[in-house]
Amino acid sequence: MATSKTGSFWLTEVMTLTAVDVPVAATIDLGAYVDVGDQQALAVEEVDFIYQIHNTVADTYSSAFQVGFAGDAAVDVQLSDLNPGTSIIRADDNNLLASGSLLFDDTNNVTSVGPDLYPDTFGKLDNARMVVNDQLYLVGETRVSDFNANYELVVTARIKARIVKLSTKDWMAIAIQSTASDN
Image (cartoon, rainbow, N blue to C red):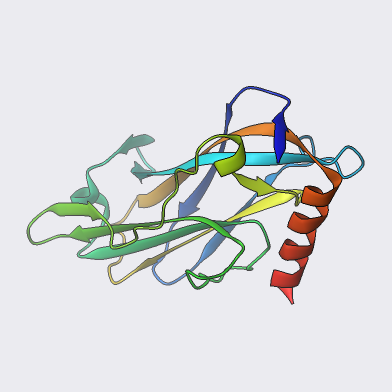
């Protein structure tokens, strides 16, 4: 299906969540990696989400969620290859590449990642998730709790990928599927 043109490399994008129930979106420009004329695509091998509390006064980052959140909290994050705006999309959407959830129990000071079990490790080449669009879209939202004064949540998406060349048939199949999913 695909021939690797590069070794694996990491793309990162950061978004900052500052208010409850206010979704935030960010984009990752893939224009330098995807080329229609050469049937060049981005093969996504793995996606990780890193959650950090940011103290805006001291400009420090930590995983001390009890300091940043004013109570219990739930955070949803998704990465897709078609623009959902600021919406969290359903798990069966063909455009969903990766998703993550963070749950924080303030009373017991317990943090867990779940119940989101979507596999965000795809593998190399034929198992990788092929992207032919020129952007990826990152959306996140916090629910339930509020932030303490001078704190916000920073979510970093780390995307392990490589540039690949697809056959004309494979390129067209992926492009048609991606376009059809948008309608």
